[in-house]
Length: 294
Image (cartoon, rainbow, N blue to C red; front, side):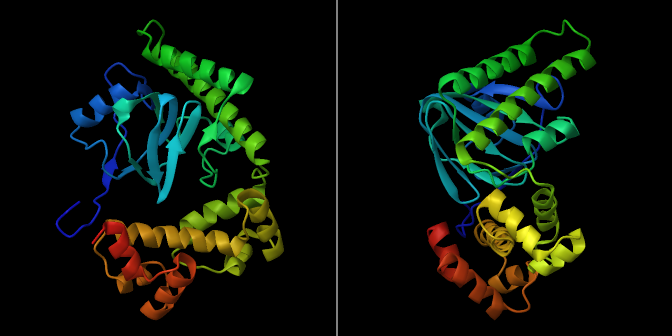
């Protein structure tokens, strides 16, 4: 925290270890702590990653937050933090045992990204892998870690392909596990395109009609696809993304509520405050004060 109570966010780029394949890495929690401190990063500060982080717990309990949602990970749990999300470790990493898999956007092939829905942030994680599924996921993670740490006995491009394929198996298994646990139907083309458009344009327009026109779908099609994928209608999906960004800016910057409302496409501060109160149950100022503990 700074003197104003602002929770400063650390921007974390991907830095490969010496000898590790560029674009992906597997670390246990002890190695993760050493890596963070070696780069001058406070391990328990809020951070925004430029890469994917898959967190798996083997023993103990680990508490984390991702975009203002608190998670408690127990043995067999997986949490997926995506690039751009604000995450924070809330408990001591030395009190749990586990593994993190770090990989850059673009490391996996487009086919794997599509099949495993790598870019879809609406997954309700953490997942719990148990029984035969848990054994399979754990075995793939062990193989991935072993291969990633293996001395350079293969040409670099071959080694990269081996790591990429093992990582693809891991994320595909997690995608299957998510579908089995959530009854997931999030793979539709309309929802994928809508999600991408919202991520790009949520500060420009909050209207489902604008996205439908842009993408060539009816409002009904987008609403039905979003409800199947995310459990809410298309308008709620847009509003949730706008609200998330508002919360990020309120907690992690010193911008005024008026400036934040303008940044997010609201015509004036009154409209922004009304939106925030309806969706969050309190005013932007009250949320900022409560969250910062001031």
